[in-house]
Length: 88
Image 1 (cartoon, helix red, strand yellow):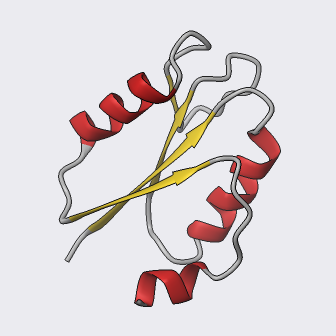
Image 2: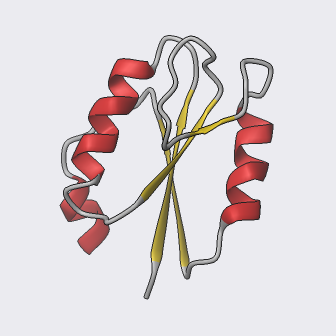
């Protein structure tokens, strides 16, 4: 079963998004970050621009989804039990 993980970033969430990305990469081989923060970009992220908030981020993720489970995380959350969540 393939869990495909999408993480959304937007202005003022960069540091937290990077932390979440790091934490999730301990569990998953790949995470797709869909970014709408023109001031903070990474080469491996899908950078869609400041004018593209949740609706466009979500539609981008849906169009990229080819897994069995769609796992979506917002860049502004605080959580530390990822492995437990995934196992459940």
